[in-house]
Amino acid sequence: VAGVQRIRIIIPYSPRRAFLPFHGRKKRWAVLVCHRRAGKTVACINDMIRAAATCQLQDGRFAYIAPLYNQAKDVAWTYAKRYSAPIPGVEFNESELRIDYPNGARLRLYGADNPDRLRGGYLDGVVLDEYADMVPSAWGEVIRPMLADRQGWAAFIGTPKGRNAFWEVWERGQAEPNWFAMMLRASESGLLLASELEEARREMTPEQYEQEFECSFTAAILGAYYGREMAEAERSGRIAHVGYDPALPVHTAWDLGMGDSTSIWCFQVGPSELRVIDFIESHGQPLAYYVGELQARGYKYGDDWVPHDAKVRSLETGRTRVETLVGLGRSVRVVPDHRLDDGINGARVSFPRIWFDADRCRFGLEALRQYRTEYDEKTKAYKNTPKHDWTSHAADAFRYMAMAWKQLTPPTKPTDAIAELLKPRTWGEIFANEDDAVDG
Ligand SMILES: Nc1ncnc2c1ncn2[C@@H]1O[C@H](COP(=O)(O)OP(=O)(O)O)[C@@H](O)[C@H]1O
Ligand SMILES: [Mg+2]
Image 1 (tube, rainbow, N blue to C red):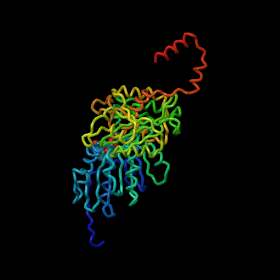
Image 2: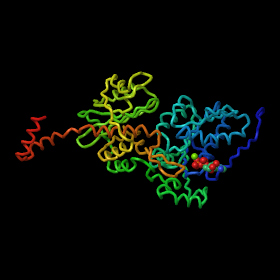
Image 3: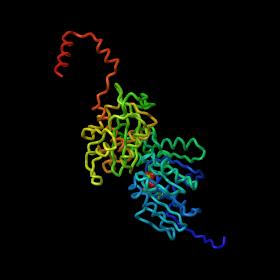
Image 4: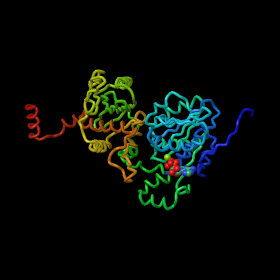
């Protein structure tokens, strides 16, 4: 065609053989389950660079998303620059982690910890790297709608982390025709030296090795605080349909984020069990928003339990958050101050008596499943502090709920009270009770 110049650009990337089918895919959706160090980040960054640099649409828009912004910045940004550098006329914007290609296309790197940065625009292609670690709502709420305008594509990439949202994508990818699905196990890929794998096997538990190198989704989530409790709750059918009982007040337990996320568990205290009937989480919203959400549900409320620091005066409003909630007509109680590990233990002890509504608590339950200790790459061990990520807020609020439950005396069943009256008693017991009544 007249006026079109053909140039040959050499990108310093030679794909690993295992990733050739991925690069050659014709499907709109893709899911790649790969072992650690398979080269999945390198492969998906290069896949996007090609898509962006050869994009025929006007102003092509592409996004690479890591679970945390810093991960995108530390690893993927280096790759993206290295492999884009030979393209003449390419421009790098360091502060926005954005690459502009001469055809007007842009590739930008994001963290799912701040999905709002993404909101508003459209996308022609997106890669979700380490999807198993990502806040599951980012896809449906933010990313998927952005692909609608121009029929954009998406690739979900990662290493398994139990049966979470990534597993669901993997299941779906294998079942539906519009998907490219591929699993890459270390024993089959030949990408890592046998000696490397042997060493890893010696350093890890068999379960860890299965997960990280053999792509096992069935391994429990490593370092998960409530892993065993959640599995037990599922096995014994306590994650079910737990409806609202109008005869009992609905209490709430809040983790209050400032600019951050706020999580709320809604629960009812039964005769011998805690019924968790609802869960709310959002971010960047004022307290009035949450109160509105609660009112819209139409429950009859008891107390709102908030953490100790809700008594701290805000510099902005000059009021404490307790005062703000009271001003909004709520009945507020403060959870007793406690140490984090005592709180977690308390929550674990309560677990066998907790029932959850599977639908309404879906997000919170996923957070509880994945709430885990931080892995220290240097010492190759789990620290005894929780990893701070999208699971933290729901998990903290859950801990407050368990603390609150301890404070609330469960109402005695009327049948129990009658049985109590009919129970044969000695004269001594009867007189002892009468004495109590007189003194009290
Ligand atoms: N096609 C490739 N050619 C050369 N080196 C590669 C290639 N793919 C990956 N690597 C190297 O292998 C290592 C792991 O790659 P990475 O993509 O970060 O792995 P993963 O994301 O699967 O853990 C990095 O050092 C990377 O530079
Ligand atoms: Mg990677």
